[in-house]
Length: 294
Image 1 (tube, one colour):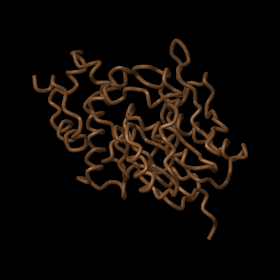
Image 2: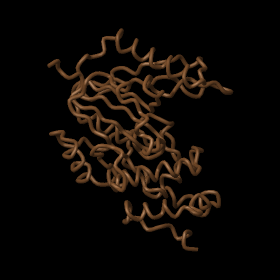
Image 3: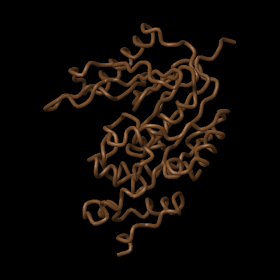
Image 4: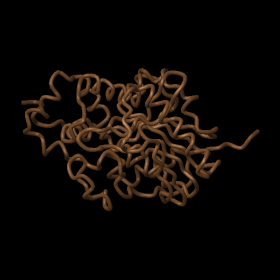
């Protein structure tokens, strides 16, 4: 048998502004050897799997295409651009083909380690009832000895506050996708094999909880702590990169209180009984905001 390319492969499912980049950074810091992270992926059925970031031109260039990250001895050693910042590719198939081809050139031409401790990739705002559409064979970046599905969930009051403050899309489709993550975490559905639930609220505040997750991941090390803020998505919706070096000081569990008197934020919970049901089951320690009973 040929040696495995990746000792571990982590497939991360989360909604944007759920804290999952911090969790992915925490996972990769368990490993001293080479780690490869492919961020914010999309796919074309049975054929392509790559990042969705492409370099988008508005009044100024907002996003680059730097989505392949390589770590060793716990440190970032290479952050590679799949596309230059002045390239505009908005047609989905063309974008995916270009991004995937560029990524494979990077992997083949830049002396990237053939054998890695871990390979991580994430899908954001993805409804888990469509997980059967994902061409995981196309997502393959070498054989993996251990494959683990991970769901990162943040309570809806702070999650929606962060999306609302950061001007991220919030509609019925987005809320429905969050609900599929919750139902999968509760095992009301079974789309994923043995998913590990990471409750972001507990992960952020409880070192013993993080150590329990480390043990469940089967990694025989001490959990490495929260670390710095991950440099994705512009940092916090509320404070940007202000707390990048001291992420544990952010008040991420009480973001909703800043917006509790905002009519637009309060309206996000209108006629969303399923969201509130799932919140009560998964986050019982968080009392529902008073405005919901008014």
